Amino acid sequence: ELNGRWLVFLPTLSLSANYDIGRESIRSPDGTSWTVTFNASWPIFDFSRYGQLDTARAEEQIATLELDAAAREARFDHANAVRDLEVARARVAVAEQALEVASETRELIATQYGAGDTTSLELTEADEALFTAQVALNLAQLQRDIAIVELLYVSGQLDDRVSTW
Image (cartoon, rainbow, N blue to C red; front, side):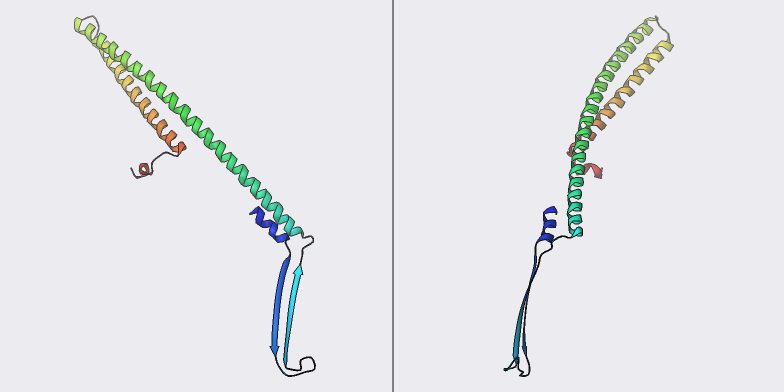
């Protein structure tokens, strides 16, 4: 659009022609007359045209800056999504280890309970710890899956089918 704004500084040209048939006169003994007019105007200085040109330049700069800002924001969002996915995967690994420890602890306490070395309260606490570890693993897996979806979204790879679920 900026290049088109320079066109207002070009000269304006016009050409017109008339041919008339009428009565005979001294100017027109045969009753016909014709005229051809050629006009050319060249703007020397016009504040509004320079203002429009400056406005177009400013709009171009604004559009460029907005595009740069959007690109920076997209890179930032992508980096955050990658980082969030890495953190979520690490949390899943920790939760899996915690579940394994809770499961082994529960088996050990169940064996001791069968031998009469522990109370039913300790067995119940081990069951509760195992359940809590399983819930923590499920939550970590859900957060990992959400991080994957967010990464796909900011990467522009999220399928349109997801919105119809």
